[in-house]
Image 1 (cartoon, rainbow, N blue to C red):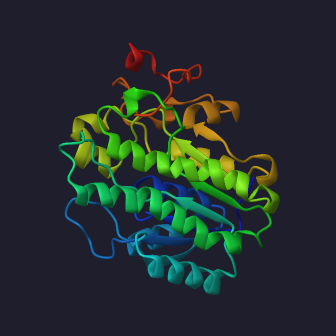
Image 2: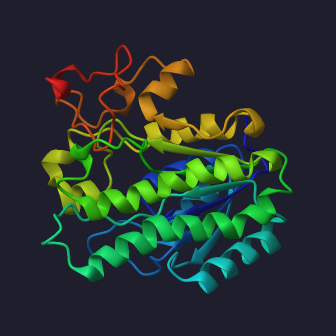
Length: 289
């Protein structure tokens, strides 16, 4: 397996899961367009598009840092065009950019509702749409959404319906576009973590430093994404994948390598269906108890 010479367009790639996916590809010698908003250092958020570019270049890839707001059509279209001009095309699109607020209906103001839907659902739709004409010319084109399985259980809607709608909008793009573009051989898949992933969102908005210790590292998502991108696009599309189950099917047996603190029980993520059981050795026994 190798992504040498492939070009990835990754939204939200300045940190976290997006950066981890970019670095995994860069180690093969891939080209990465870093499409993100952070150009200046932020007091609470690590990394910028420029620091990410330095890491990608150091890992062996070629980087193109681009200031992109996925809510802005002109911004996305210009970034896609700049990527094609720089690298000659696009092989892989990763829709990673996302906004979160876990509040109920009365506590969710419409400004935040709009932000989540504009970034998550609309941004994914727009970015995919902009990349598709170029993906049609690629040898093994993939689009990956960092979004959950479409599990219509009320438990995922009752406490934060606005966020759930926005994330499921991303997954609906997978469902629809996989069918729409199967004749073009473009793969559309969704990848979602079984547990919390140690990112700025966990630290700053959800669970703090203590919660970070109960997470897995972004590398589990990067390894899963890498395996997806190396699948034959015409034969592997329309899938809603949970990271550890998919990696187990790919031969991974050591899941402790991804734990931030092996002494702590893992924190389950949202949106994992009850029917999805952890693979052997995943270390989820304490979390599910």
